[in-house]
Image (cartoon, rainbow, N blue to C red; front, side):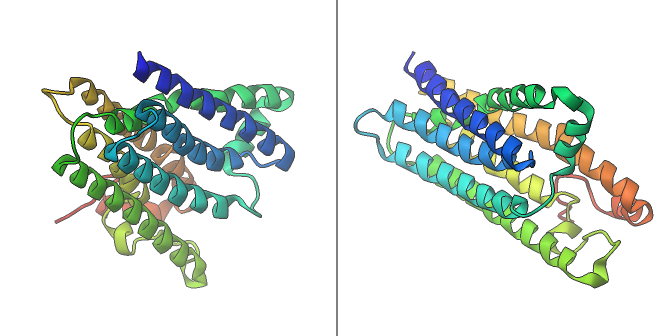
Length: 261
C-alpha cells in the first residue's frame, strides 16, 4: 500500500508537469518543450516517490537512488533545453500540429498526459530500487556504475554528433565517427543502459522479490527507443534526406547494440 501511494504521488507530480508542458508548448508555439519538461518531470516524480517511501528518515539507498535520479534527469533535461531553446518546432510536433488542425490544442493536451502513463514503470523502478531493504551492497555499486556509464555514454554520443554537424565539410554525410561507428544510435543505447541500473539496485530475489518489477523500466525504454519514438522516425528521415549515404551506413553499423568486434 505504501508503494502504491508513493507511486500515485509521483504520477500526480508528473501529470502536473505535463500540464505545465502543454501551457509552455502552446504559448511558445514549440511542442518540443514538452520533452524537456517531461524529463525534469520524471526526475521530480521519482524523487517524490522515493522520499514518500523513505518517510521522515530516508536511508542510504533512498539518497543513492535520489542522487542517480537527479543525475539522469539533469543531464538529459539540460541537453534537451539547449537543443530546444531558440529553435524551430521539432518535426514530430510540427507534423502533429498540421495533422490535428483545429483540434490540435485539445489533442496535444491529452497526448502529453498519456506520456504520464508511460512514466509509470520508470518512476516505479526508481521507487522499488530505493526501497530495497538492507545496507548498501555490491548491487548498489554495480547499478550506480551502470547508470553513470549510461549518462556519460549518452553525453559523449550527443557531443560527437553535435561536433560532426558543426563541421560544414560534413553536410549531407552521416555521422559515423567515434561511438557512431559502433552503433547507428549510441545515444539511444546508452539512454537505455542507464535504465538498466534500477533493476540491478532493486535486485534481491529472495528477500525482495517485488524488486524484480523494476525490470519493466528498461524493457519499456528499449521498446520506445528501438521500435516507437526513437529509431523508426529518425531512420525514416535519414532514408529520405541521405538515401545513399545512409544505406551504406546501415550495411556496416548495427542499429542499436554496439558492434564490439
